[in-house]
Image (tube, rainbow, N blue to C red; front, top):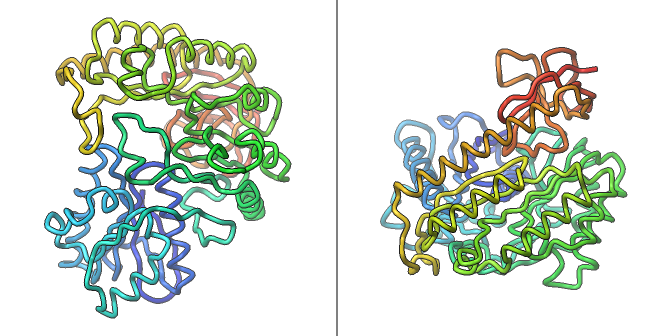
Length: 451
């Protein structure tokens, strides 16, 4: 995603890669630089400084980051670019190894340094650096006064409630890149949400590496449930949505809030990864088949209208045909509203790299497409059942499809990762909430008209 705006000094062109958590870091980078007098531009050829904020969670993200860096490094030859800066997970993970791989880059700033980017650029331009790589241990937490320029439309924002992760899943490198879990104070988060509401934001998406771990590392009151009780009192915030919720710390109190607080969306992003006990154990997950099934049954019984999103992984070392058959049956039985699938890949530095036997690539592909085909049928069936319903929709503006005038999202659709509602009749402005009657259910999207 390309981010920009405009002001007065060296021109900065910034590209943000990866997840919403990375996007918030990019917004902070932008805010910090504008506060320091830099100008942000949409034109990479006019930029004196190009910044790439990278993801390196998985091999595919690392490849995308390197490809983007190499492509933009051409601007040092054909454009106005004098400095190329790489921030985020890639330098934090690979550190000095990048010096030989990417000699075109002038400065590498890890996940513990991006907030100091203005000072780093000043020193870089003065020619005082002896090192190009800065990867301090990540300890930084946002606060209400952190400069930030939203890359999202003005009516919606992500709010990062914590940094890092204290789980040690065997396939995951995040604790090495981001450090252990560190919760912000509820007062800090509430103040930020109030600031965003004053700027016109109406939808808040709460994010962290694990949102349900919030407060367990400190004396932050009563955890995520207590935080939500504070946030729902903030005027003008219409929707609050929970993303990245690890199932291990999902409490009954939190589920009660989902059932009873109108501002908190009936939506839960619950990455489960698998359902087979042997696979979950090798993954280092602290949940079992029985615990997951009982949790989902409780959520569905307490919040019948809940939209559940999960993420699963196929092809983990040692995943047998029996394990996969159990996973497939689980997907069919619980019929998630939204579901994403990863094919397992060995990630350097993780414990899972040493696990055997490895699942052949061809088998991973078959299992991936099998689950995706199954889920597309489930999604299509659920969407068709919505025909005739009247749903509150947040209008996003002009439709991405030429067949429809507008598009928006319902409370059960998170930005970027879920489907949308195409609006074929009626007028409304971006950021407004309207009632839409659903006329048609597609595989992942819905079609309707404003009533």
